[in-house]
Length: 157
Image (cartoon, rainbow, N blue to C red; front, side):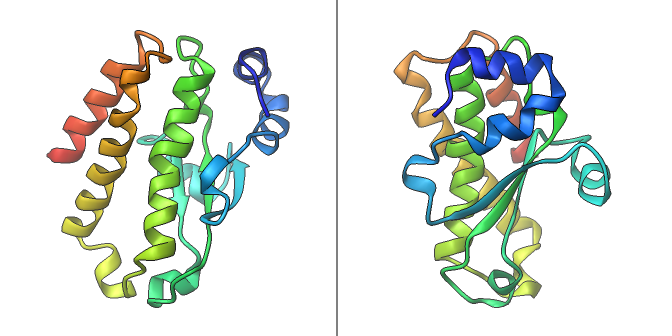
């Protein structure tokens, strides 16, 4: 279990980010998430870091239609925003990336269809909708909601 001070430390100290991620309680997302890893270099960093704070990597067997395989979530430096709160971070991690992981776990598609633009857009909007449902709980910072709305609008393009 993590608290706000843990998130603040992870924002300030990159060396603490992996420890912080390991301590997160995945709540109901345990079956769907195999691992959460901090990614600050390498192939996936180069591929996703510019546009994303986090990314869900489905299990390779999920890409050929095998259900019940947990995904990995990569967390990039951009996820550690000083203006955000712990609840904002967990909203992105669990209610967005966790929703992607759940979708891959339950509804695996074949490799040809998985990357089709319409499927990606549908999955992205489903994850943002899940994230937005929780905003009314009043636990997020004032910077969080506009950020999510902006990303949701970009996903619609």
